Image 1 (cartoon, one colour):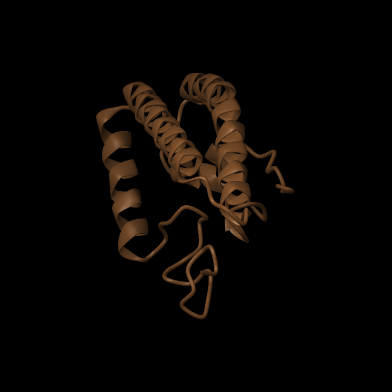
Image 2: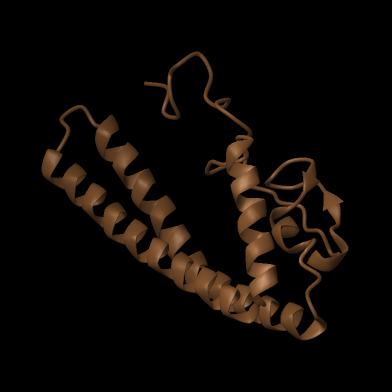
Length: 152
C-alpha cells in the first residue's frame, strides 16, 4: 500500500491525499484545537512511540489473515488450524485495541479541558455524518454488490 504523507503540522490543517482520501488527513482532528508548540511536540512523540508499538502487530495481523486465507483455500480444510489462526487474530486485536485506548488517553492528558471538549465534538460530528469506519470511507460504500469485504 502506498500512502502519501502531509508534511504540514496538524495546527496548519493541511489538506492532501493519502490513505484517508482527498481532504484533511488523519491529523485533522487536531487542526482546530490551537495546540501549543509544546503540545504538538508531545503528541508527535506519543504518535511515534505508538506507531513503533503497533506496526509490528499490524504486520503480524496481516500474516495471520494471509495464513487463514491459505488454510481456507486448501482442499481439505484443517478447522483446528483455522480456529487457531482466528484465536491468534482475536488476541492480537485485543492487544492493539488496548494500545489504541492507552494512546488516546495519553494524548487526551496533554490537552486542556476546552481542547478535549472540541475534540469530542468533532468526533461526534464525524460519526453523525458517516465519516467512520476502518478505511476512512464515508457511509455504507465499500465492497459493493452486497458481497461484503471478502466477496463471499
